[in-house]
Structure formats: structure tokens, C-alpha cells
Image (tube, rainbow over the protein chains, first blue to last red):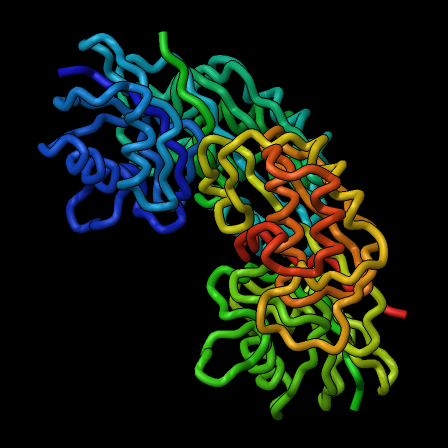
Length: 247
Length: 247
């Protein structure tokens, strides 16, 4: 049996997120497992690098699984894509050491939050962006973003009810770009992310872009470690898992 | 009663095209008429600039209609969008002279055909592009495109069974761009287009990009005036009506 690492792209619009859960029939993990099991002619269980929420997308989600059949590695994406629905695509397959674990061995992840800053939504982008009506000041957002970079206790940036041992995380990079005239991208890379952390960062930076928060306010918000001082949780559909990095 | 001209953007994926037809329940015209009739509290009939096919999209479709209610012109898009589904958006409304007719007064139209030239499809773009696996040579496509520009009898570039008095049309502009590393756009502007003409032009230029047709072959194809010598009809989903121009 080989341990196979795959890279997946998906449109999360019609899914209840990545992880298989009771009473949620349509998850990405389940659909991929079913496709792989069909290919393998035997049940396959996969481990994903991260559990994306309902409506969240991926350009580079990573998963691994054990495969019985002797299919050439280069043929796996093509064979798998014939079994997968059109909103999930396998882009790459690599054989990895048997001890490789796509969640435990993660070194960093990059997420992109896409904002459509326009008076009207776009029928082509509507499932992949968060439309923000008011004209955002990207320079204010960049200033505020600088306060988030680095190692901090992100207790103010985690969804209420989340139970983790530590809320300290390191943000290596947080870049804000303007693309296509009316789109703003927040690209954030960190060693790990708390539940809803990227969406709360996005919501907070949007408030900064509206002039409702200063960079100094972001600093204080981090220091206060209280969810109620951070911004809104920006909607799931604007979020895409871009890349997962390994040791 | 005012004559109102509106500009519409739509994702044509889930529609049987623009025009209301017997036994096709879900057309864009019908959905827009229903939304307008609700707003107007009285039946509204609209005239579209062009009849886009099933699966074809629009960034700038134009339509006009007579409106009874005294709603301010600037409020029409907002009011209409609250009644429209998420895949149709009204971007603009203008009051026009009573004799304005959005189809008869058309001077020119621009269409875009989007090709995803990659080994894998994109989950985000899949409904708006035509995925062509083989690496297309954009320079060969540009050379071939030059033969199409100008006033020609496009009898070879019309779907079989179409009944029009003349198949002579003028192409003012045909530009081919590379965008996002793996996408090719064919932007074509002309005084009018025959049934499936843009999709047959796209299919023919794709064959040129694969090295299967020379620029000279395109010239001969036009001269032969026979559909069977032109390329395939590229799929509807890659086509978008970009803009309609008026006198």
C-alpha cells in the first residue's frame, strides 16, 4: 500500500464543509472518499490538512490516503477526476513516506479572503467573494494589517465556543492587494489558524477600510483578547484555502 | 409611461437562454419580466438587444420596456435587483426616447469567448470558460483572426438551418488576449452576428491555435461559404455578451 498525497481545488458553495459529520450528507471529504473508494475498489479514508467550513473554497487543499491498486501516480488525478463532480478537481498526486500525515505535518497555510468592493455584485464572482458596498480605503487596511502580523495571542479572533489549548498563533505574512479594479484580496499565511480566525481578521480589516477602526485599535483588540472587540466574522463564501506548506 | 433602457449582467448557466419560448420555463427574459411586473404592479414586456443561447452569459445585455410607476430612474436597478435571483443583476437604468428599440437600434455588439488553456479545469471558472487541453499557440490564433476582420459573407460561420436574408456581416475588431497565465480571450465586435457565429469563429480559431488550420485556410473557408469547412461550434458556456452599442 502506498501513502498518496493529493492536492484538491474545490468550489465549496454546495457543500457542508470539508469534514464528514453525522447528519451532514454532502461534505467534500465524503465525496472524495467515495470517488477514491470506487477507484480503489475498496474503502479509502482520507485525512485533510484543514477542515474548511461550509461555503469555503480551496485552490490547494491537501489530503492523504492509503491506496491498494497499482495505478501509476501520474494517472491518479485523471482517474479521480472522472469520478469526482465538476466542483471538485484533483490537481496533483504524489507518493509520500508512509508516516506522512497531511494535518499533523503542516508547517503553514495560506488563505485568501476576496472582497468585491463595488456598488453591485458580480454574477460571475458572487459565490467566491464578499460584496462590500462602501468604498474601502485599501491604505487604511494595509496599515491595520501590519498590527496582525507576528506572534500574538489571537483569543479575540476565534469563534466563541472553540476549545483549544492555546490561542497563540504566528502570522508570517498578511498582504492586501487590489485586483481587477474592484476586488481586494487579503492573503494571510500563518503557522495555524483558530476557528473562524481568517474570517474575523477579514471582518476586522474591512471595518478598518471603512474608517471605523484605526491600526491602534487593532493592536488594542489583540491585547484585550476578547472576541467582542474584534470585527464581524466575514461570510464563508469569500474565503479560499490557497496553499498548505509542509516541513 | 416612460421607456426605460436597462443593462443586465447574468450567469446563463441555469437558463434556457434569453428568449421566452413555449415549453422552456426558465428563460432570462421571463425572469426579468416577472421581476419588473412585480415592481410595476402590472405586466411588463421587455425587448432584448440580442437573444443569447442557453448557457451563454452577459456582462452588458441591454433591454427596454415601458414603465407605469413613477419610481426615480436611479432607484430602478436597486429595486429590480431585490426581485431578481442572484444570477441576474441590473447594473444601470436610463430613460430613453419612446421610439428607442433595444434590438432595432443596435449599431454593434461585442462578445467575449473565454478559453481555459490548461491541463485541468478550474472549479471557479468552469461555467464561464471552455477548457481546451492542448497548448494553444496564441500567435497562430492572432494570425488566423486577421482573416476574419472586415466585411465578409459569413455563410460558413452560421449554424445549419438558420434562415436569414443575408449572411454578410462586418467584424470591426477581433482581439485575442492572454490573461491569468492560462486563459485566452477572443473579443469580437461586429455590426451583427449570425446564429452561433461567434462560437463557430471561436471553434475555428481554436483549431488554428492547435496548428490544424493556417490563416490561409481561414480565408478559403470564408470564400467557400460552406459550414462544413469551418471549425466546431465552441460550447455555449465560454461565451459572454460584453456590450451593445447604439447609434
